[in-house]
Length: 471
Image (cartoon, rainbow, N blue to C red):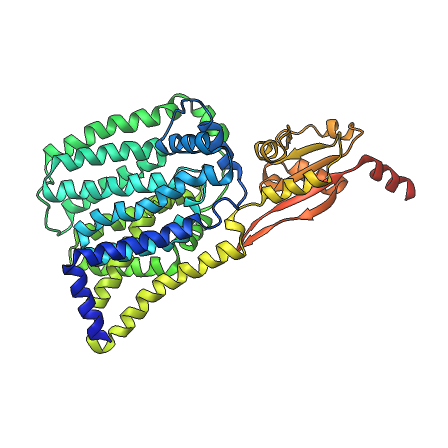
């Protein structure tokens, strides 16, 4: 068996048709996973923001918003059409990233990386969201790899391409600028560690990259510098802690991938492997920075999503290195480690589809329940009124800053649709609802340690008065 594996690896290295056939199969797997139940999951809050921004006749913003705008304009607004562009970007990321990874590490590592990305639960989730994260990850990873090629090969053209890709990534979201501390740490460590210096590590190239890069960074950061109060009003609250950030990242990247990637990085760093140094920093720096930010600022583990490809490439490198270095009699163990890397995320994908409602709140079912039971004149109060407006096709009231005296003075019934954030952001409203309204439905979605809370309450003043009289 091991002889057949060795023969297949040799054939893979030498046969480009075989490589492209496997790449096509992996891309089809990625497509099947990303389009399965694409339109079944409910919209959630951030997707409504995307629809709002993409609804302009000439949308301003990142490429992902323009693609969403084109899809909903041509196909009409629905969960499927709004997520079509992110899903397609998620699928084409497999072949687009294959070629630079192959150039860097060879076809075997590139194919294993593509397969791990295809089945990654985190990448699958954001591919099935009307958000910008798949485009962000693609541009960011390509920027990182082309920067490495530019320094390694002394090719200024690659550095300029890297800048362009970084600009596209930052246009998607400003935390693409994690790129800056990653490459700065990389260049500093190249100077002080006993690594062989790449040919492109010289002042001309560094000035060519960092001077325009500084301008790009200032351009995208300027709105936050000019209006810090507006920024802090939205993102100034502390909502997480370092443990929650790191545990979320470990859960989404998957423990086998992180363990294999980390141990593989340590092994390759002892070999003075420069690419593994850059990828290690790209995997760790965004995580450590976000953990530090969470102590005094709004932070989420999705900010670290840009590190996913670095972990996957490091894990793929480690798996193939283990396969090539292990003696033939024990190579079956190395194959087992590679299989485990694949089966673990696939198991999570099954839970994602069958039991965890796509890892998101079930707003669609909640508002459908309200619509079926609602009577003429009833008011609806929602934790996210944009979702209520969309699914009910009528105006709903926001729980944010809700005037409870208005509810108490209302003679008709009032429906409340509450998610997991209400108890933290509007505790007074939450307590009033639990005291005065009746729980009608519990549509919570459980995903391991996280509960996507979704409760429907009905405030009926007539019933409330009759209960008081009967007592």
